[in-house]
Image 1 (cartoon, rainbow, N blue to C red):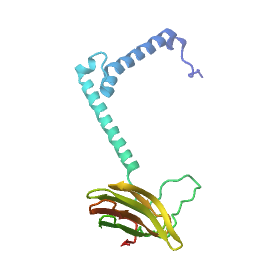
Image 2: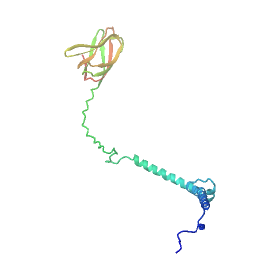
Image 3: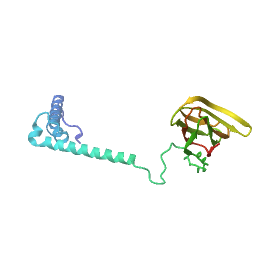
Image 4: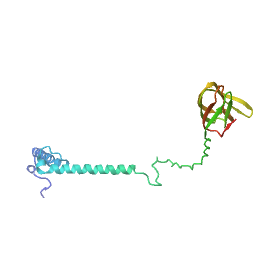
Length: 219
């Protein structure tokens, strides 16, 4: 029986013919890539053939649609990432970490605000007369004050007293028309001012007080 598995040597292509066929196929593929595929898919037309065939415009439209789709996808992903968590949804936490449960805050007692009073008081001093105004204040209480005369000058003494304390001086001066500042109580007690008119005319002292004191008293 004759051997039919092997072809005659003359029927097989030579190596030169194989190389030439391969080169031709590669050239044809490259030509199709440059003139058809690139213009139609990417809008790239190096030879100008794609423009003549209308493929370049089609490729540019495809690229524009692809960019719009990618932008829409990016916006959707960003919206999902920044969307607020629904009620009851827990935030992501590292694996194995227990959620922190907020303890119920105990009510905190709010201290009562300090008492705030304000007065405008006029003290009339005849020649050689002295008068005193006192404020009932607790230790460390603070009062802003100012006083002035309508004419002339007076001597003054800013001081305090309390049970067991006859006198505690803050400041004093002579021949003054006015004074102002902050009076901070050194202890619980009566804190204030004494004025004396050493002139020959009647003088009116106007005292303004505002701050933490319980009462104003003319002594």
